[in-house]
Image 1 (tube, one colour):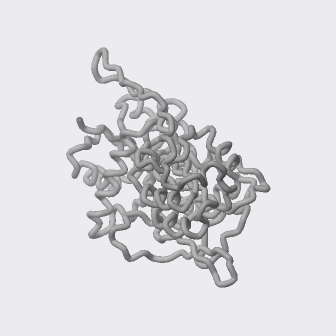
Image 2 (image 1 turned 120 degrees about the vertical axis):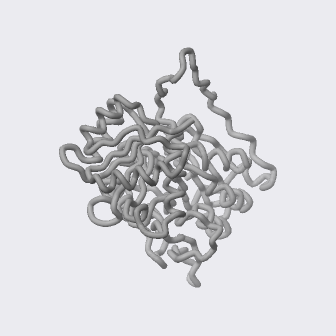
Image 3 (image 1 turned 90 degrees about the vertical axis):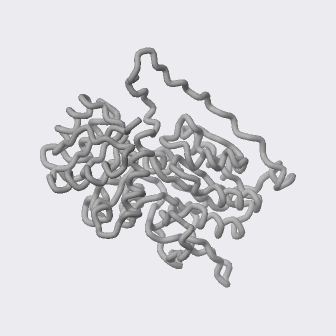
Length: 359
């Protein structure tokens, strides 16, 4: 089976290059191109693609308006392609909150010696093509029915941490990890936190460099608690939501005076794929916050967060994962759940309530 792709961009050069990159992989078939949002909507309705690549700035109808219209009239998985500078990052973050699945830096994709980046782009495109939008795709064969897997209950707690889970301590810190579909999931949680939320929060969202500052700014305008991108050596202060900067690793450290600070640094380990990585952050947080650490793993591709969640559980902390039926991509939560590290598996619409329960 080949995934059907629609490429949307107002530049003929960009359309040609994006099509060439996509068709390097035999899993994909570009079924059409569109020059703006209006053209895209018409061709989505006609071609019914499995995934759409969407430019941000276009004449007649821009990418953000197109995403909002598509998700309302003819839902399809959309991957935004944007520059890493200017207003493109802010618009891309809005598009992700409006229902786009993922984003990728256009300038990186077209750079020299970027075989690894192209492979990552194609992997994200494939993940998006199989994402759960909460709607059924038209069947390709008469009588085809896609079986729906019922929601699965959370596994029993491991005995690894003994009786301390009978009466767990109140959480003193919250780390949220997410990837594909994360910005939209975060929009169901962060704006619902009360203004007197008593603990600090760090969000580790997989994004290209340059986009997390816009993500933090957008949520700062939506939330009752302040939201900002984390800085190196910045204290981890209660009642504030921090976003881990893309392109770097954010780890926790304790100062001599007992304050907990965030270190934003490069990470030389070639085995760590994501920057920021949920595993790297949790491995530093678990021994500092111990039983006071609450971890939430939301929608996303891959298994980042599984190893770190195991360390959180080993130190007596709690781990909550998003349930399968509410995930855009049930990858990261699934890996944590199947490893037995989840205390609870919660639908997205109940996640804020679950967080407040622990807090």
